[in-house]
Image (cartoon, rainbow, N blue to C red; front, top):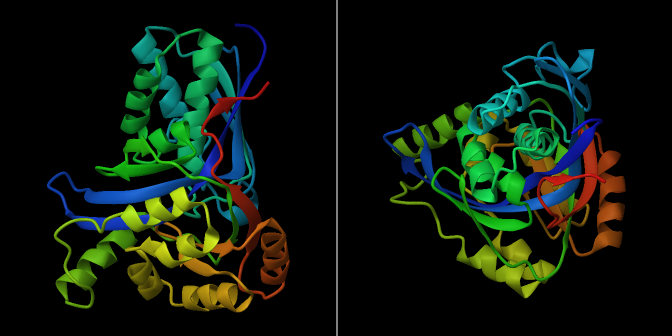
Length: 309
């Protein structure tokens, strides 16, 4: 193809995250329920000689810190391009641009969304005609959350999260995402979970906690049962490493959220609202309390990585 191909992919919230023991391969066995929400990064791909990459938007300025979103082969977008080219037997020639709206280092899978959007855009640009199974296999090699970023919607993730099975969500739910302070290291949060379990501060886990209550709540399509079912095994270690997140969670519930939890390894707090109007009101209130550096009202589920007409 000639010209520019554009694809976008959504952020995710983990509405359930059950973490089992550490596996021999260094990962934890997970049962997680992903929800794709209406906050998107966009990847544009055009013909080029070799690969080049520019990144703009959320979290890419000087204040974000040098190198926080790399513009070289360490970026998942670059790696996605190389993997797809190798798989399809084509030259890895493309000029890529990532326009970010998903906050960086927030536990919202922004990097995974970028990689998924790059796979979709480059498949179209290069005419590789990769099957869905091929793209999912490449996505799993890039990272645990990348397959879900391709699939979107609501889905159960097992294994290390890369084995994705869609689940029914009867209606959209409405959320306010509040990013509190600086990013948290995902390996550090998992390490703290292991330490707390070994010390008896948290119960030992023979396996991940089941996702059935959240899946049933999504199927029912009502906000109150979903609020009661929200679970994140990484929340206690995240709160240990970042005690200020307790204030963020309390601010969300005090402002009228049905429930709030740390999403993934943090530092994003996902606050569930009863409906869209309440979410807009909740976002406005939380933006003024001085706890969050970024506040976004979103809803989900939304589709995964897609071409933009």
